[in-house]
Image (cartoon, rainbow, N blue to C red; front, side, top):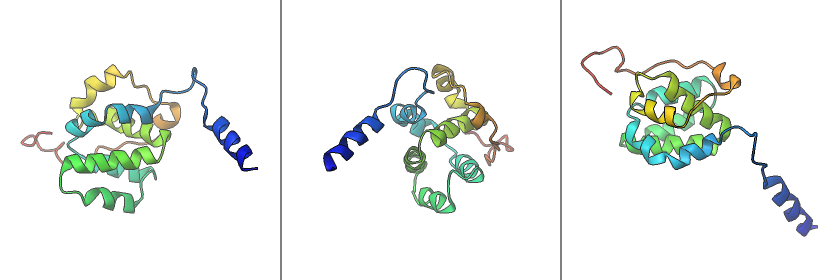
Length: 139
């Protein structure tokens, strides 16, 4: 019986390659250090992830406890990736939609040819970047 369970598990884990959507989770893994170096505002990401019920307040508190922005971004990426493809796609969608806060990532978004699914496009994204209203602050 145990041997059959393992065999079934292996079959389930195999995913056909072809017309499946882009592996957003994998994009976040491959480009992790670029994202860590370019994302300066984590609050906007957290606000939108909470608003769309992808993050809990506990997730936000866990990310907020880290002392540096880079460490916060790493933790947010870890949490996003642990939640799967849809959350990973929405994370990238936030970066695209809040282009004034994440302007340094726009060339990367063009490079990966990011096109969100209709499901993700239907989810709201709000720019909560505190620096957006102040001309004296830069990202």
